[in-house]
Length: 301
Image (tube, rainbow, N blue to C red; front, top):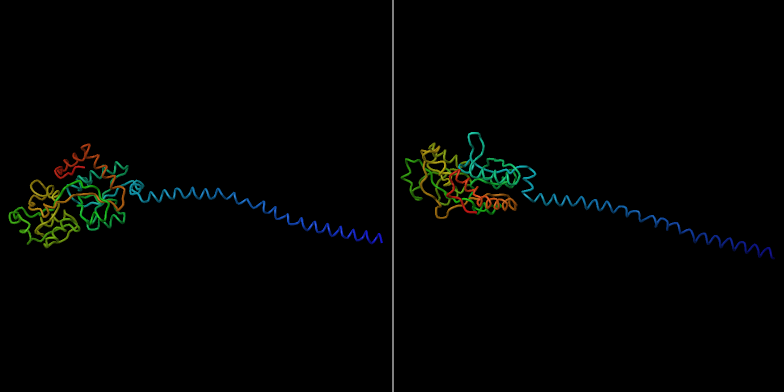
């Protein structure tokens, strides 16, 4: 009997030990749980990503700046036409004139070079948008079309549109009405074209104002309408067109003003206004105007 009881007790102890072992086995996952915090080591990667995003944001901001754009290129590309005394070439082929000289000085103040590109005047807005040029600086009249499509500088010169005819016929065309029978050569997209259209006069479009003068001199057009500042420099005694003269202004009462145009939203327009103000204050703007005989048309800045 005692042996049976001892055997039963031994069996019960064996069962109890087995149960204890079963209860202690789940402790193993705790080791796995303790190992899980390791991913915290990934935190530096997130910091690195944030660091990489900062220069990208700065680059995106810089991309909205025309100043940053031209400084990266090392040049200010200026859209022009052949238009003395504002933009024209000397005997060495270098672009000079009041606008050309001021553009060079402005570019220098920004730490870049001025590069001049002849454009089709009628496409000036498209050229800006395509970034083939950075500004239009060529005796550009501040019309509603221009000011709505470009970021423009303050006006810097007064101007008007005048009729150019052969000097030996000038006596017959001393009024706007007397000019109604003429066939005009006008620069495409110009203020001169707009004035002739407004009057309902006959005209032929040419690429620039210099070509319009050539047409009159050659007899292929009766007259041209060009800027008064150009007429003063290019027409009459002592000029290359001494057989021509200018008579009446088509918009003398309204008048016109020149400005420089940049891409919409450009930060360069404000910078040019500051440059104009400083140049006017120190006398360099007036000195440049006197070099090309347009001082009377200069607007105070």
